[in-house]
Length: 102
Image (cartoon, helix red, strand yellow):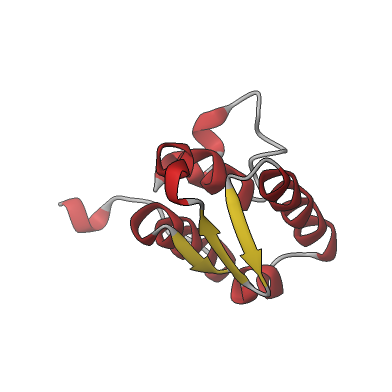
């Protein structure tokens, strides 16, 4: 049965997945809950990656709201990867990051 198989996500992983889904589907996401669910080191790394994307004009970031630039929709997966705290630790194995699973 399909319901007997699958991947059980922790609450933290579910929050990461929801935030990634928001940015991919709506082009905007409130990252407050995501940052609260992460360790300080993970949150700092995510914020650093988002700062870099904002500097490149790919996103705008106002408080906890991250939004794709109007002409950057095609780059939404890059933003999703930036929101994935596992991404930095699994660059050698992309199948392990949640951005690839959503």
